[in-house]
Length: 471
Image (cartoon, rainbow, N blue to C red):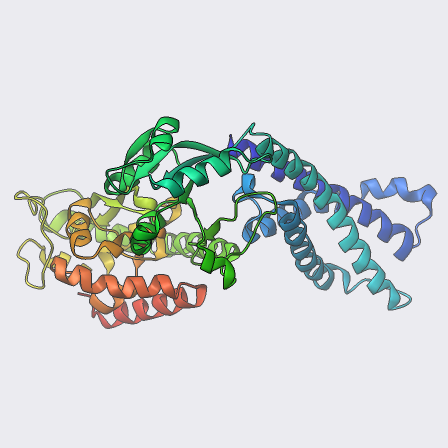
């Protein structure tokens, strides 16, 4: 499945549909509101407002759809959700256009306002929804007929795993699961399951199995005696960008814990690991790009002066790049102004402390006011980091932290940040114990993640910078 091609289909359909809707609405305004005779409508083609609208309106609507999350998970769209999503976006967009562009129209009666809004809403919805419906319907049929699907990993190797595998495989209308193999929970596997699917490993290497096999969906089918391990399993999987489903117990069904999302498919519980709504993720990214761009522009003199001072006060390069672990456990290069001497880690990885002799005199000042961190605005623009998020660590220290606190891997569910809740409370950690302690606040951030929380953390960070209380 080519996700980019699929996204482009929706974007192109939305662009054309929105352009047609605006053209039709423009002609409606001309004939009904301005009373232009039909014989003179040809002159409307020379109106610059028409051509400007045909360019700007589709781009504006597509931006709204992107913020809403329309172009994410395009292969998991349902026609009912598509209807609800399109109705909501059309309503929001039409209200904005009405108050920004249409409210100052000269009209003979207020009933025209209602008519203009209803026509705008109707045209936009019609020309947007029905092309989407065609694309989504084709995708749904392709999934149901097993032409396309999702690489699926089965966790469990007992009787329940075999039964759920059979049930999913024998569905008359496929849910799109292409099983790549299973993960063992104990030494003895169900013989039938072992013959039908390859064993890909155990829970010890489940992350590597997911990466190696491009797994998109995980079905947890553990036995009753293994249910106590569910929290650990879900925590491990949450750090990966996969859809998690779990087989329900009879008591879950009795007490109403199972929310059925499909009439035809197996009753599996979908574990929602999203921390925010789709539109909030989009707004967070917009904030990142806007603030990082402004910061790099306004701080360009500071970049230049800092670079000169770093270069002239100690030998070595101006910038220091180091591999850190980011979203979904993927490594990336994080950039900083060099605050230590060039041979600071000749004996291996070491954490800094208050009186660390490896830190240069100017480096000590940079750390207090977080000046060494500002090159990371470039990481934010690239998308490997966010303004706010758990501080990224090196794999060397992650391995030590996970031995004491396996829940640390949950932090890989979000992009790492220039600043964080833990950073505001602790600053630079001096040892693994402090890393674990700081992690508690970063986990609290995950539980309370929102645009409001990000703004609060940014404000507290600004106060720390102004007061020079950085550690």
